[in-house]
Length: 293
Image 1: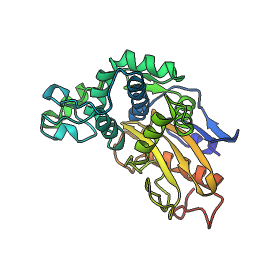
Image 2: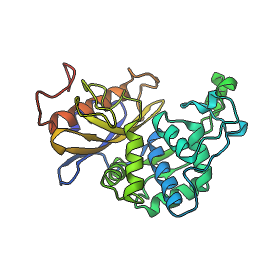
Image 3: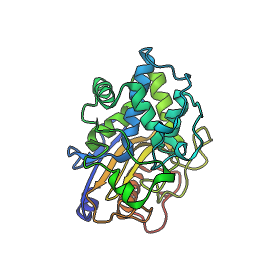
């Protein structure tokens, strides 16, 4: 199901797909390490929830956003005025739904830094997911091309195997990350994530979180995007109760562009179309745009 897609990639494509509650699945280079880009924010969210459950953080505590906290890249906090005081739960929502980098750094600091995040994530059963650093882009008013280039260290934000990211999403959906309540909160936040340019790019319709399933499927996921790399990890819910966890990572790509027309987004979409076609059982035909997969 995946090999022919990987063979046509200019770099490396890794994927792990698993139907929940069964032994069915597919994999392609799923044990190799890839850059995660922002998909690692799912693991950061899990670390925050673990700290809260242990009584070391309060999800409703307010955290003031100051000038030193602001970093550029994705998100909205960096273009709002300093002085806001979102809750820790708000920061988690911003980190996942709009991939806010400022919120991410604040949450990493609240957990205790990158080593603390990695320690918590490893204790949850996912040592293959490694956060390397905080995000370091300057805030938008200060960004020039040279500054942005200089702000990207040689090492990636994080690395992981597709297999480990898929296991994390599977565990979130099954309620075994931190606790059932914490897992449910992580999953609901992922269901509100707004980027649909990757795995579900060819799906004809999506059900929103909390909406009646007029259109299928429902996708709860986190995407990641840096030059030459696209990644996504999530869960697809289909009619009849079929649920599929997945992690797809395309890295070392020749295409360094940062638009939804990039090779990486196209590759993720092809994987998504293959997954939907394989597990779709109706009603009706597979809801894909013509020509896919």
